Image (cartoon, rainbow, N blue to C red; front, side, top):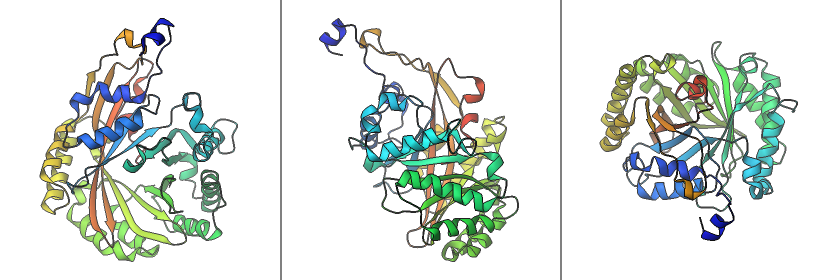
Length: 374
């Protein structure tokens, strides 16, 4: 803070980068290499404090050690980033967020407590970065099997984000995909990557039995990866008790499919050792099949396990105070990406949750984060 600012008694606005800096010494450079940390600092210097944070890590390629960042859209975003709100992209994001609140068009259908923005690495240095936006469907609607209404609602929300009407063919593909889901599988989230040129809608489905995934993919036209999905699910069935299947729907259904894998023990949060065994066995399988580098797998295992430690507030003469007193870290989940061209790939999602005195126990990670599944 400048002397003139201090003499006027003005306070510097808190920024998310302050929280990043508070835990920087704990960030393993294998998982958070300097160039990625620099990009994260550039992005988070433009954002208000938010929590939890989810870092997306590619497990194999040493030359691709970039990180993507996901975070919940802060409630005070419009006040903090008034200049962004007048940009076309962010104006649409704020409009959808507003429409999801009580009294809005999507009230009760879109869960506003899970309104996430994902920033790709290549957006982090932009003055006004463009995110992907991911939203939860309310549990009542997601399990209602009212596929026609649900597909219309999603396409209406996407049209607000895109600023254009979603073609009927995409809505029909979405409705058909919903109709083919196995009985116990339900729709959980949808998203739009505004930073990417594709007009597709990302959809996520939970409640799977591993043996049902490949046949369903064949039914919806993803035959190119169905055989590989069968092979993998037969190799590691004990690691796939909790899964979310993700795919992109456009004029056709993209054959690139993701399976997000969560440790079973996270349902009860009762056994860190059980979670560690899951991650250890999973990363061993990844390295054995050349899907993860051994150094990243080891660093990931060292990060694993719910750990809460204190963070220091900035010195008072710096003029700001954020109220967060601790940071909890853990592994959220792993993701297998089945791509008919690039082949099988693996990603890890690393969690950092900053804890505020106003948080109640139900909001603390990892329990708060289990149903996000980006």
